[in-house]
Length: 513
Image (cartoon, rainbow, N blue to C red; front, side, top):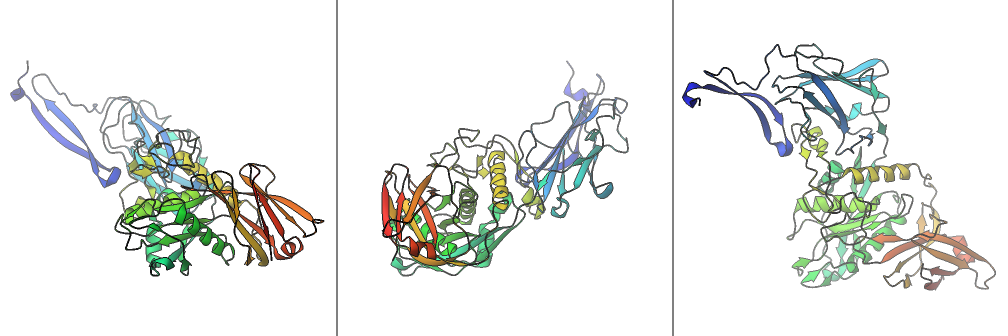
């Protein structure tokens, strides 16, 4: 047995690479020599092991297993590069990313691997990352990645040193319009007119997690005029129980949005907790529309308070925005309905690694820190959170469908708006009709689904018209659904008797006066 006194060992730090949560990871080579000879783990220079470029994946927060999620034009992306070597080595391999428009080279970037290269990739961890600036993520841009272009490292085959293996590949991209959000301070008139004081800087801060996780090239925020609300927040000291206050707030916010000059925006109410309340049941609520063309865009939540800080507010805002873009809760963690039954993991975890591209692009991180597949999706009731490939792709599909839908009319028209609710037992309640000047047309659907049958008729019953209008589920709604009927004023005057029938056959009737 060799004595440790017979060995001479050295430890060499060979590379530093940025890792998750801004930690610094290093690779070390331990080399010992003595009577038994050199025991270094580094192959000799003459060992022509195969160096191979295995995979290049582009991401803006997450990516699916087949790398089928396209990049949003105008948003920064990261190219994750995975490399293997048939025998372990600590060689720092140069890697080059080339971007082209047509046959013209428009961008090149070079990096070096850090750490040990071996026969197998380590999970989803890339050996090299390239930040692709937002201006370069555009239609018609193609890419190529090559390792060791100068052939400085012994390699048994160079045919697998470039990807694609021949030529270039077009970067798959889509165009999304800006996501426009109007934050609305809510004034609680039953509690001493407690206002939610929110500045534009506050609003920008509230959407930082949404910018980080959700597919977007631009989120434009504004702060609207305060909205007075006379609803009850609950019985002190515990308030904010669902649906209660939140359902009333959503309907009020959406009604003002619908008759505003900016009905295409998401209107987001911000509430301050009245001082007599020492606990809240729910921190926010949103509409969960069934269709991207459905005329429903409203959410509401609490501003930072003594119960939770800015970090939780940012999570809640991103979560509620997700609802307005069609996402339901992920299963597990005690999440209430609506639940996404198609979510791939029954516990609501990501199942695949995400990457914080936004933090690198904004200078908050060195590299795009990886986000473990064991984290929870943003629509989960557990934390910590990131966004899954499943929900990232779902939002993309939703927003692309919305952008491809009918163009909103620009002429504002006089209309009569009738809002209503269906409770968990199917009972229908109609609110009082109100006059408004609106821009958006009423979305009318033919299928049954989650909808109500609206009939308008003249007082003598000779003139009747029917249409089917979608209902909207509520986050935490406990089975309650809302709907809004928009009738041109001339039509409402000609047929002032309005009946709304729910799926179970129960109905309510109103006369427009």
